[in-house]
Amino acid sequence: MRGRAAYPVWREIATRWSDNDVYGHVNNVVHYSWFDTAVNAWLIEAGLLDVDRGDPIGLVVETGCRYAASLSYPEPVEIGLGVEHLGTSSVRYRIGVFARGAAAPAAEGHFVHVYVNRADRRPAPLPDAWRATLESIRLIEVGHG
Image (tube, rainbow, N blue to C red; front, side, top):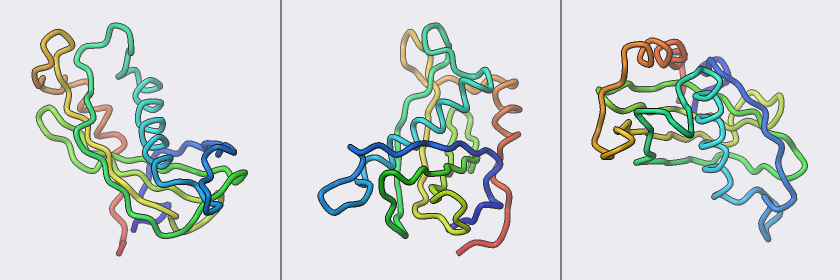
């Protein structure tokens, strides 16, 4: 798993009481919500996502997560985000989930968008300006296991 130095973009997210499951830790499905929040918040801030009129739009086609440590309410989490791969019409993001201030991630996942035309949902090439913005948050290559 990658450490903090690999991620160029960061976002803190508060945990909620309802995030904990019967075992007293954040349930695995919550991590996927954090992935969605981190990616889409960055896209909005970067000017690449207009939820009402944007074209093309990103559809999630794949997600995955590996868990290394438990997290629990009320501990906030810090989400590291970077682009791992750019295709013609797709982006693979790598996301690290860290307890506040922790050096090692509690979880690491990926999130893949395929960009499509809003009207017909057919794959659409990423515009050059988008590609440049996405390249600006490419993962930083450092040693990882």
